[in-house]
Length: 345
Ligand code: ATP
Ligand code: MG
Ligand code: FE
Image 1: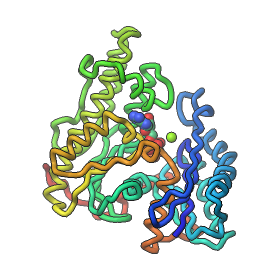
Image 2 (image 1 turned 60 degrees about the horizontal axis):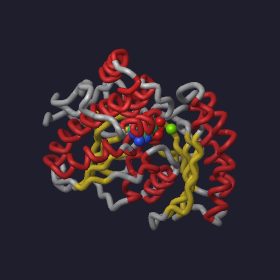
Image 3 (image 1 turned 30 degrees about the horizontal axis):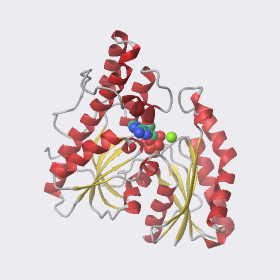
Image 4 (image 1 turned 90 degrees about the vertical axis):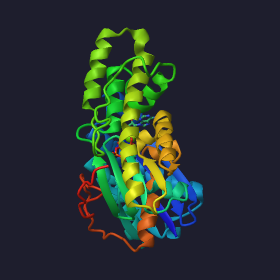
């Protein structure tokens, strides 16, 4: 089975080919960094136009480089949401057009499910697994019981982890995109220098909160000088990583009790590219007897390989979508899962 995946939900225009031997037959990502940098963030209308300009060429290029044509495909998958609706519309419409013209099946992929299932492409990951999904718009702890089957144990009550990186970076004058810039700036810094808030650490449950960190970074900057930048960046990164590790440790404890068959802790989403975050989570996994799995950084940030793979996982279960699928700006991962009362850990 060969699947073409298309990703256009934010500021990456991407296409990729994945087959059912878990081989990546081609992948291309065009980041619209230059378009958005002057605005200090992603501008939805600018993004939608850029997707429209770039996508056809990206798809053609990925097919050509792989030496394949649309006739070789079995399935065309595109991110159907959640995301910036203009971009999603461009990707979904293109995918439908290819599927219709070439007589192939279509799958509308939930972008979060694409992040969530990536580790099953890159590693031998079995259901059920514990997932920390940390991206630009989301920060959640979930049990992945199967394709389309998620139980959410925790979420952020304000900012996402990626937002915490981006906003801290912006306050520090590191520009956009903030996460990688802050990680680079933190390299030579002392993470213990500034005691920034770890809002939910030690609290019951598995929720997150990052808005206090943002305020504290702002206050610290006012007192600090330019030479303090590496220490501030390292301290902010440490505060984020510690909260992620603390919440994940609570979920890991609960997971090993409620899912004795589960053996793996997986991290996904753009923040999973961060080496400090990965190291803290690896330690949490080890402490709770779980294997730690993190996809390679390029598959943590937005890409189409994860969309093709999620499309393939769905296609194997005959979970196709009709050409009448309407893009969804909001699309919670656990929307179809029954609610579970929090048992406390
Ligand atoms: P979502 O997936 O929630 O819809 P998104 O698609 O915009 O949001 P991703 O592309 O998955 O998000 O992740 C982007 C986020 O990851 C940004 O906030 C970015 O700063 C952060 N990020 C990327 N690389 C790193 C890094 N090395 N360290 C920390 N954060 C990072
Ligand atoms: Mg992006
Ligand atoms: Fe994403």
